[in-house]
Amino acid sequence: MSINLVVGTPKGAAVLKSETGKDWTHDFVLRGWPATASVRDDKGRTYIAVNSPNYGVALFASEDMKEWKQLEAAPRYRPTDRGNPEHHRLIAKEDFGGLLKGGGRFVDQIWNLHFAHGALFAGVSEAGLFTSRDYGGSWQPIDGFNEQPGRESWAPGFGGLGCHTILTDAKDPNRIWAGISAAGFFRSDDGGKTWSPKNKGVDPAVEAAPATTGQCVHSVVHDPKNADVMIRQEHRGVHRSTDGGDSWQVMEDGLPVTELSDGHHCSFGFASAIDIASDTAFVIPLDGDNFRFPRGGQLAVYRSRKGGKWEPLTKGLPADCYTAILRGALSADQKGGLYFGTASGAVYASDDLGESWREIASGLPRIMSVEAYAS
Image (tube, rainbow, N blue to C red; front, side, top):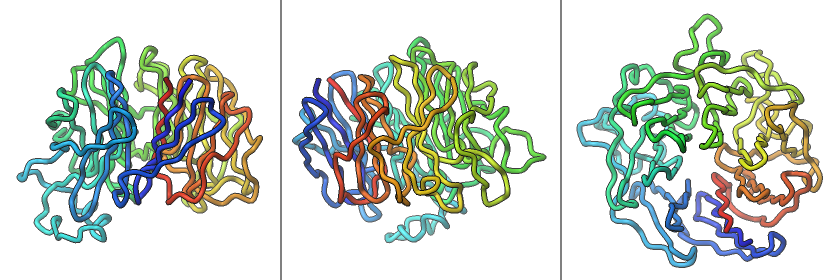
Protein backbone atom coordinates (compact mmCIF):
# COMPACT_ATOMS: atom_id res chain seq x y z
CA MET A 1 0.00 0.00 0.00
CA SER A 2 1.41 3.37 -1.00
CA ILE A 3 0.62 6.47 1.03
CA ASN A 4 0.91 10.10 -0.04
CA LEU A 5 0.63 13.02 2.37
CA VAL A 6 0.10 16.62 1.31
CA VAL A 7 1.19 18.90 4.14
CA GLY A 8 0.21 22.55 3.70
CA THR A 9 2.41 25.32 5.14
CA PRO A 10 2.72 29.10 4.68
CA LYS A 11 5.78 28.55 2.44
CA GLY A 12 4.64 25.70 0.22
CA ALA A 13 3.48 22.08 0.42
CA ALA A 14 5.49 19.12 1.68
CA VAL A 15 4.67 15.92 -0.22
CA LEU A 16 5.59 12.83 1.82
CA LYS A 17 5.46 9.39 0.20
CA SER A 18 5.84 5.86 1.51
CA GLU A 19 5.35 2.39 0.06
CA THR A 20 5.40 0.70 3.45
CA GLY A 21 4.36 3.37 5.95
CA LYS A 22 7.82 3.10 7.51
CA ASP A 23 10.27 4.86 5.18
CA TRP A 24 9.26 8.22 3.75
CA THR A 25 10.54 10.39 0.92
CA HIS A 26 10.10 14.15 1.13
CA ASP A 27 9.56 16.78 -1.53
CA PHE A 28 8.70 20.45 -1.03
CA VAL A 29 6.60 21.88 -3.88
CA LEU A 30 4.87 25.16 -4.78
CA ARG A 31 7.58 27.01 -2.90
CA GLY A 32 6.61 30.48 -1.81
CA TRP A 33 2.87 29.81 -2.02
CA PRO A 34 0.93 29.38 1.23
CA ALA A 35 -0.68 25.95 0.73
CA THR A 36 -3.95 25.76 2.64
CA ALA A 37 -5.96 22.69 1.51
CA SER A 38 -5.83 19.57 -0.65
CA VAL A 39 -8.21 16.99 -2.14
CA ARG A 40 -8.16 14.08 -4.59
CA ASP A 41 -10.92 13.48 -7.15
CA ASP A 42 -12.44 10.27 -8.51
CA LYS A 43 -9.84 10.12 -11.31
CA GLY A 44 -6.88 10.17 -8.93
CA ARG A 45 -5.97 13.78 -9.63
CA THR A 46 -4.72 15.76 -6.62
CA TYR A 47 -5.43 19.45 -6.05
CA ILE A 48 -3.68 21.93 -3.76
CA ALA A 49 -5.17 25.31 -2.90
CA VAL A 50 -2.80 28.24 -2.41
CA ASN A 51 -3.18 31.92 -1.67
CA SER A 52 -1.09 35.05 -1.81
CA PRO A 53 -1.74 38.61 -0.58
CA ASN A 54 -0.27 39.80 -3.89
CA TYR A 55 -1.82 37.38 -6.38
CA GLY A 56 -4.94 36.04 -4.66
CA VAL A 57 -6.03 32.39 -4.49
CA ALA A 58 -5.19 29.71 -7.02
CA LEU A 59 -5.34 25.95 -7.49
CA PHE A 60 -2.64 23.59 -8.68
CA ALA A 61 -3.30 20.04 -9.89
CA SER A 62 -1.14 16.97 -10.44
CA GLU A 63 -1.66 13.54 -11.96
CA ASP A 64 1.45 12.05 -10.34
CA MET A 65 2.18 14.20 -7.25
CA LYS A 66 5.38 15.35 -8.96
CA GLU A 67 4.46 17.83 -11.67
CA TRP A 68 2.02 20.58 -10.65
CA LYS A 69 0.11 22.78 -13.06
CA GLN A 70 -1.84 25.89 -12.08
CA LEU A 71 -5.50 25.83 -13.11
CA GLU A 72 -6.78 28.85 -15.00
CA ALA A 73 -9.84 29.29 -12.78
CA ALA A 74 -10.34 29.73 -9.04
CA PRO A 75 -13.28 30.73 -6.81
CA ARG A 76 -14.09 34.43 -7.04
CA TYR A 77 -16.89 36.58 -5.66
CA ARG A 78 -18.73 38.99 -7.92
CA PRO A 79 -17.46 42.59 -7.94
CA THR A 80 -20.80 43.75 -6.51
CA ASP A 81 -20.69 41.44 -3.45
CA ARG A 82 -20.25 43.36 -0.20
CA GLY A 83 -17.84 42.16 2.47
CA ASN A 84 -17.95 41.88 6.25
CA PRO A 85 -16.24 44.91 7.87
CA GLU A 86 -15.02 42.95 10.88
CA HIS A 87 -13.50 40.28 8.63
CA HIS A 88 -11.80 43.08 6.68
CA ARG A 89 -10.33 44.48 9.89
CA LEU A 90 -8.89 41.11 10.93
CA ILE A 91 -7.17 40.35 7.62
CA ALA A 92 -6.21 43.93 6.70
CA LYS A 93 -2.57 43.29 7.58
CA GLU A 94 -2.37 40.99 4.54
CA ASP A 95 -4.20 43.38 2.21
CA PHE A 96 -1.09 44.76 0.55
CA GLY A 97 -2.99 45.79 -2.57
CA GLY A 98 -5.71 47.69 -0.70
CA LEU A 99 -8.46 45.54 -2.20
CA LEU A 100 -10.60 45.75 0.92
CA LYS A 101 -10.79 49.54 1.01
CA GLY A 102 -13.83 49.56 -1.27
CA GLY A 103 -15.78 47.23 1.02
CA GLY A 104 -16.02 44.35 -1.46
CA ARG A 105 -16.12 40.65 -0.67
CA PHE A 106 -12.99 38.77 -1.70
CA VAL A 107 -11.75 35.21 -1.58
CA ASP A 108 -8.59 35.66 0.46
CA GLN A 109 -8.11 31.96 1.33
CA ILE A 110 -9.39 28.53 0.34
CA TRP A 111 -9.84 26.79 3.69
CA ASN A 112 -11.18 23.48 2.47
CA LEU A 113 -11.47 21.39 -0.69
CA HIS A 114 -13.98 18.54 -0.94
CA PHE A 115 -14.95 16.15 -3.75
CA ALA A 116 -18.28 14.32 -3.96
CA HIS A 117 -20.85 13.27 -6.56
CA GLY A 118 -18.63 14.37 -9.44
CA ALA A 119 -18.15 17.90 -8.10
CA LEU A 120 -15.36 19.84 -6.45
CA PHE A 121 -16.35 22.08 -3.54
CA ALA A 122 -14.31 24.91 -2.08
CA GLY A 123 -14.92 26.50 1.31
CA VAL A 124 -13.39 29.95 1.40
CA SER A 125 -12.69 33.06 3.42
CA GLU A 126 -14.50 35.47 3.42
CA ALA A 127 -16.93 32.70 4.31
CA GLY A 128 -18.57 31.11 1.30
CA LEU A 129 -18.99 28.01 -0.84
CA PHE A 130 -18.12 27.45 -4.49
CA THR A 131 -18.44 24.41 -6.72
CA SER A 132 -16.89 23.15 -9.95
CA ARG A 133 -18.51 20.53 -12.17
CA ASP A 134 -15.61 20.40 -14.65
CA TYR A 135 -12.70 19.41 -12.41
CA GLY A 136 -11.63 22.94 -11.61
CA GLY A 137 -12.04 24.36 -15.12
CA SER A 138 -14.62 26.85 -13.86
CA TRP A 139 -16.16 27.76 -10.49
CA GLN A 140 -19.66 28.86 -9.56
CA PRO A 141 -20.79 30.40 -6.25
CA ILE A 142 -23.37 28.49 -4.22
CA ASP A 143 -25.58 31.54 -3.81
CA GLY A 144 -28.01 29.88 -1.43
CA PHE A 145 -25.17 29.69 1.07
CA ASN A 146 -23.22 32.83 0.17
CA GLU A 147 -26.28 35.09 0.30
CA GLN A 148 -28.36 33.34 2.94
CA PRO A 149 -30.50 35.44 5.28
CA GLY A 150 -28.71 36.38 8.50
CA ARG A 151 -25.26 36.54 6.93
CA GLU A 152 -24.95 40.16 8.00
CA SER A 153 -24.95 39.02 11.64
CA TRP A 154 -22.07 36.55 11.25
CA ALA A 155 -19.12 37.38 13.50
CA PRO A 156 -15.65 36.16 12.52
CA GLY A 157 -13.24 34.26 14.73
CA PHE A 158 -9.68 35.44 15.29
CA GLY A 159 -8.73 34.22 11.81
CA GLY A 160 -11.66 35.89 10.10
CA LEU A 161 -14.82 34.37 8.61
CA GLY A 162 -13.64 31.04 7.23
CA CYS A 163 -15.73 28.22 5.77
CA HIS A 164 -13.39 25.42 6.83
CA THR A 165 -15.63 22.32 6.85
CA ILE A 166 -17.61 20.76 3.98
CA LEU A 167 -19.38 17.41 4.34
CA THR A 168 -21.69 15.50 1.98
CA ASP A 169 -24.00 12.48 2.05
CA ALA A 170 -22.92 9.61 -0.20
CA LYS A 171 -26.55 8.43 -0.48
CA ASP A 172 -28.14 11.84 -1.08
CA PRO A 173 -26.34 14.44 -3.21
CA ASN A 174 -28.78 17.12 -2.04
CA ARG A 175 -27.51 17.00 1.55
CA ILE A 176 -24.50 19.25 2.24
CA TRP A 177 -23.05 20.58 5.50
CA ALA A 178 -20.74 23.56 6.04
CA GLY A 179 -18.97 24.87 9.13
CA ILE A 180 -17.88 28.47 9.66
CA SER A 181 -15.86 30.11 12.40
CA ALA A 182 -17.57 31.77 14.09
CA ALA A 183 -21.04 31.60 12.53
CA GLY A 184 -21.83 27.95 13.25
CA PHE A 185 -22.76 24.78 11.38
CA PHE A 186 -25.30 24.69 8.52
CA ARG A 187 -27.07 22.04 6.42
CA SER A 188 -28.80 22.10 3.07
CA ASP A 189 -31.29 19.41 2.06
CA ASP A 190 -31.97 20.76 -1.43
CA GLY A 191 -28.56 20.83 -3.10
CA GLY A 192 -27.47 24.18 -1.69
CA LYS A 193 -30.52 26.29 -2.52
CA THR A 194 -31.46 26.87 1.14
CA TRP A 195 -29.61 26.34 4.41
CA SER A 196 -30.52 25.94 8.07
CA PRO A 197 -28.30 26.37 11.15
CA LYS A 198 -27.64 23.09 12.96
CA ASN A 199 -26.37 23.98 16.42
CA LYS A 200 -29.09 22.80 18.82
CA GLY A 201 -27.52 21.44 22.00
CA VAL A 202 -24.18 23.19 21.49
CA ASP A 203 -23.43 25.54 24.36
CA PRO A 204 -23.85 29.04 22.88
CA ALA A 205 -21.24 31.73 23.40
CA VAL A 206 -23.89 33.79 25.20
CA GLU A 207 -25.70 31.62 27.72
CA ALA A 208 -29.11 33.26 27.17
CA ALA A 209 -28.93 33.13 23.35
CA PRO A 210 -30.59 30.40 21.30
CA ALA A 211 -28.18 28.06 19.55
CA THR A 212 -28.91 29.27 16.03
CA THR A 213 -25.83 31.07 14.72
CA GLY A 214 -22.74 32.36 16.44
CA GLN A 215 -21.24 29.03 17.50
CA CYS A 216 -17.50 28.76 16.83
CA VAL A 217 -17.36 25.32 15.24
CA HIS A 218 -13.75 24.19 14.79
CA SER A 219 -14.19 20.99 12.77
CA VAL A 220 -16.78 18.27 12.05
CA VAL A 221 -16.24 14.75 10.69
CA HIS A 222 -18.49 11.88 9.62
CA ASP A 223 -18.74 8.83 7.38
CA PRO A 224 -20.44 9.95 4.13
CA LYS A 225 -22.15 6.53 3.92
CA ASN A 226 -23.57 6.96 7.44
CA ALA A 227 -23.90 10.71 7.25
CA ASP A 228 -26.22 11.29 10.20
CA VAL A 229 -23.56 10.38 12.79
CA MET A 230 -21.20 13.31 13.31
CA ILE A 231 -18.42 14.31 15.70
CA ARG A 232 -18.05 18.05 16.25
CA GLN A 233 -15.05 19.79 17.80
CA GLU A 234 -16.40 23.12 19.00
CA HIS A 235 -14.69 26.02 20.75
CA ARG A 236 -16.86 25.06 23.73
CA GLY A 237 -16.54 21.30 23.75
CA VAL A 238 -16.81 18.06 21.77
CA HIS A 239 -20.29 17.01 20.66
CA ARG A 240 -21.94 14.12 18.80
CA SER A 241 -25.04 14.03 16.61
CA THR A 242 -26.94 11.00 15.34
CA ASP A 243 -29.52 12.94 13.30
CA GLY A 244 -27.43 14.83 10.78
CA GLY A 245 -26.86 17.81 13.05
CA ASP A 246 -30.49 18.43 14.05
CA SER A 247 -29.40 18.00 17.66
CA TRP A 248 -26.10 17.61 19.50
CA GLN A 249 -25.03 16.00 22.78
CA VAL A 250 -21.84 16.68 24.71
CA MET A 251 -19.34 13.83 24.18
CA GLU A 252 -16.43 14.38 26.56
CA ASP A 253 -16.22 11.24 28.71
CA GLY A 254 -12.48 10.60 29.02
CA LEU A 255 -11.34 13.89 27.51
CA PRO A 256 -9.33 16.45 29.50
CA VAL A 257 -11.55 19.35 30.57
CA THR A 258 -10.06 22.82 30.79
CA GLU A 259 -11.25 26.28 31.77
CA LEU A 260 -11.77 28.73 28.92
CA SER A 261 -11.06 32.44 29.14
CA ASP A 262 -14.76 33.10 29.89
CA GLY A 263 -14.85 30.55 32.72
CA HIS A 264 -16.63 27.79 30.77
CA HIS A 265 -15.30 24.27 31.41
CA CYS A 266 -15.02 21.90 28.45
CA SER A 267 -12.58 20.02 26.25
CA PHE A 268 -10.94 22.44 23.83
CA GLY A 269 -9.22 21.71 20.52
CA PHE A 270 -9.36 22.17 16.77
CA ALA A 271 -8.59 19.01 14.79
CA SER A 272 -10.73 15.91 14.34
CA ALA A 273 -10.68 12.86 12.06
CA ILE A 274 -12.48 9.56 11.57
CA ASP A 275 -11.40 6.11 10.41
CA ILE A 276 -14.48 5.02 8.53
CA ALA A 277 -13.86 1.26 8.44
CA SER A 278 -13.62 0.98 12.24
CA ASP A 279 -16.00 3.84 13.10
CA THR A 280 -13.27 5.38 15.24
CA ALA A 281 -13.00 9.12 15.86
CA PHE A 282 -9.93 11.08 16.91
CA VAL A 283 -9.35 14.53 18.42
CA ILE A 284 -6.27 16.33 19.76
CA PRO A 285 -7.19 18.37 22.85
CA LEU A 286 -5.36 21.56 23.81
CA ASP A 287 -5.23 23.35 27.14
CA GLY A 288 -7.97 25.92 26.60
CA ASP A 289 -8.24 29.02 24.46
CA ASN A 290 -5.70 30.79 26.67
CA PHE A 291 -2.72 28.47 26.12
CA ARG A 292 -3.58 26.29 23.09
CA PHE A 293 -0.91 23.69 23.74
CA PRO A 294 -1.23 20.06 24.94
CA ARG A 295 -2.47 19.62 28.49
CA GLY A 296 0.50 19.39 30.86
CA GLY A 297 2.84 19.51 27.88
CA GLN A 298 2.05 15.89 26.88
CA LEU A 299 1.08 15.65 23.23
CA ALA A 300 -1.80 13.15 23.02
CA VAL A 301 -4.34 11.99 20.49
CA TYR A 302 -7.66 10.80 21.94
CA ARG A 303 -9.66 7.96 20.38
CA SER A 304 -13.34 7.01 20.62
CA ARG A 305 -14.59 3.74 19.16
CA LYS A 306 -18.20 3.73 17.94
CA GLY A 307 -19.14 6.72 20.08
CA GLY A 308 -17.66 5.28 23.29
CA LYS A 309 -15.40 6.75 25.96
CA TRP A 310 -12.34 8.66 24.77
CA GLU A 311 -8.93 7.14 25.52
CA PRO A 312 -5.54 8.92 25.36
CA LEU A 313 -2.87 7.68 22.96
CA THR A 314 0.65 8.90 23.74
CA LYS A 315 3.11 6.15 22.78
CA GLY A 316 5.83 7.76 20.69
CA LEU A 317 4.54 11.30 21.21
CA PRO A 318 6.65 13.88 23.07
CA ALA A 319 6.22 15.22 26.56
CA ASP A 320 7.34 18.78 27.30
CA CYS A 321 5.53 19.73 24.10
CA TYR A 322 4.01 23.20 23.86
CA THR A 323 2.99 23.54 20.24
CA ALA A 324 -0.50 23.63 18.69
CA ILE A 325 -2.35 21.44 16.17
CA LEU A 326 -4.56 23.42 13.80
CA ARG A 327 -8.01 22.40 12.59
CA GLY A 328 -6.93 20.99 9.21
CA ALA A 329 -3.79 19.23 10.42
CA LEU A 330 -5.15 15.75 11.28
CA SER A 331 -6.07 13.15 8.66
CA ALA A 332 -6.89 9.44 8.33
CA ASP A 333 -5.97 7.43 5.23
CA GLN A 334 -8.90 4.99 5.75
CA LYS A 335 -6.44 2.08 5.88
CA GLY A 336 -5.72 2.34 9.59
CA GLY A 337 -3.20 5.14 9.19
CA LEU A 338 -3.36 8.50 10.99
CA TYR A 339 -1.23 11.58 10.43
CA PHE A 340 -1.01 15.03 11.98
CA GLY A 341 1.23 18.06 11.84
CA THR A 342 2.10 20.65 14.46
CA ALA A 343 2.46 24.40 14.40
CA SER A 344 6.18 23.87 15.04
CA GLY A 345 6.61 21.91 11.80
CA ALA A 346 6.68 18.24 12.84
CA VAL A 347 4.61 15.45 11.25
CA TYR A 348 3.62 12.31 13.20
CA ALA A 349 2.26 9.06 11.78
CA SER A 350 0.53 5.97 13.15
CA ASP A 351 -0.29 2.79 11.21
CA ASP A 352 -2.29 1.14 14.01
CA LEU A 353 -5.18 3.53 14.70
CA GLY A 354 -3.11 5.63 17.05
CA GLU A 355 -1.70 2.91 19.32
CA SER A 356 1.83 4.08 18.53
CA TRP A 357 3.32 7.09 16.80
CA ARG A 358 6.57 8.19 15.24
CA GLU A 359 7.85 11.44 13.81
CA ILE A 360 8.24 11.25 10.03
CA ALA A 361 9.14 14.88 9.28
CA SER A 362 10.46 17.91 11.15
CA GLY A 363 11.75 21.39 10.44
CA LEU A 364 8.76 22.35 8.30
CA PRO A 365 7.04 25.74 8.57
CA ARG A 366 3.84 26.05 10.59
CA ILE A 367 1.56 23.22 9.41
CA MET A 368 -1.92 24.34 8.37
CA SER A 369 -3.28 21.19 6.72
CA VAL A 370 -2.56 17.48 6.33
CA GLU A 371 -4.35 15.23 3.85
CA ALA A 372 -3.61 11.51 3.46
CA TYR A 373 -4.18 9.47 0.29
CA ALA A 374 -3.68 5.70 0.31
CA SER A 375 -3.72 3.42 -2.73
